[in-house]
Length: 188
Image (cartoon, rainbow, N blue to C red; front, side, top):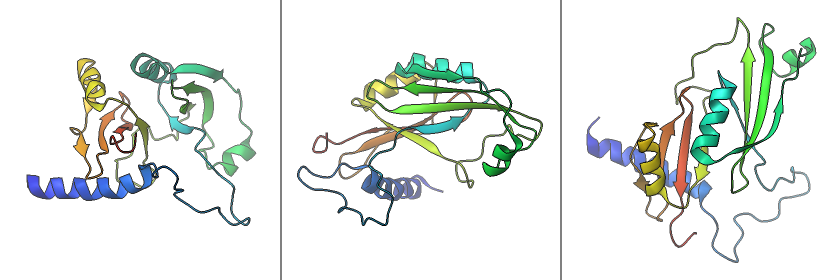
């Protein structure tokens, strides 16, 4: 695929994503009040991420983003009924889970499982079940420079959407994708 086609593809993906990530203009609501028959949800509380080494992941987010541990648990044996309910492999055990909080309030919950049936391979970005976390930064250029200085794998240089939103992806040491987003000056 040539450079122009890649740029067009990236822009079309970014335009679609920015429609969901953009903050509505002052005084406007992005949605009307939902009917009483729908869940009354207002914000995302946290995002969960399975990791192969919870100590490595905790240190990565703490060192890189200043995340602090607000909860750290080792639950012990998990009942078989839970494994069935949550579609876990029957051989797996939840070793530990840690809740991290970023300076701006965003939370990330890390899980470490062990078991012979667990697939250690991270899914490709286009596989069903693959996901990413998008975090907002106030200075995308400084964030990019910091990541590069720490030899973190950068997946793309920042892309600027027509509305001024800028974004790029980087990869954790275990293969998860994280997106950094900086809102345009009109949306800040």
